[in-house]
Image 1 (tube, helix red, strand yellow):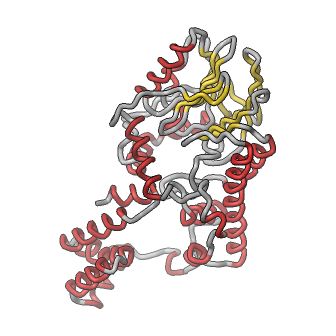
Image 2 (cartoon, rainbow, N blue to C red):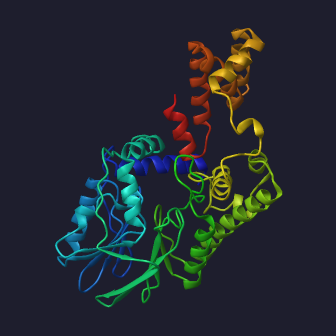
Image 3 (tube, rainbow, N blue to C red):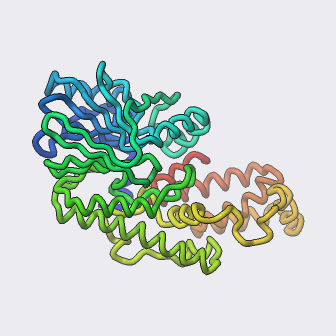
Length: 400
């Protein structure tokens, strides 16, 4: 599957689970008693003789209601437990749909701090999620159901003959965990595996944890699961395939971590790290780490940001002048708006959109020139059209 097809698939799934399109919800059978529902974020369902376990709850209330109806078509037994793999909105926003009298919600102890942060910064997070997902999540406010049961490292319980282990490990979040059903040898991985390049260094979000991420994937790999249900995308059902997929993500995270650490110790400027660090060929070609959501560029910057301060080593940037003042100085040297505009048209024609945007900002920031703004919009639009990365493309789209 090529990158553009994958991007269209992401958009299609988002439409189907956010109310923009309606598609019948299906409980996809993994093996006896184990099901999941594909959506923007997957929902796992485990049936037992004593009740039901739901893993994650979807961002869309209507999607969650459809899933709940499908569960009720199969059993009248109560939903005994809801497990959060982590506290991202697409995994926890519709818990109230599934929670019945007596249902226990289980999540890592760090999730409550995440929910508090989201409420404190609700306007900001609504804004950046709207930008990243092009308003397709349909969120107007945040609603959270805090866990009834929290744990520090691991948590285990048994229900109807199923022994369920919840294992904490940092990854996209510090409250992340995966679920392992021992006797059935199945793992619900949450976003530790998502059929895409690991989303380290998201330009809109806080730091993620690449080292702990690959360490947790190694734990999953050691279990040799026969089925792996990811946080997003299709389930994997062959042991050998699962081992290969996990190893490719492990190798990717390990490689980036080690390379960035090496360059930090050498004093390499960030822009040269981004230029010089290249994935080995087998990872560039792996179907499990295609750069459609996370990407190498973001990841290098994310690891660098985690381990360093904001100063990049250039004294010019320690206490910089205002952007408007810098633009005015540059323009005073050129002394001719049309020179910049002509050059930028040439750059756009040559598909050098990034450089065109840099130059156009001189006119936009210093003089708010309408023609420069229109040219920048053209450059951004074309840059978005050719971009294979979902997040990058949507950020460009937002500013057109």
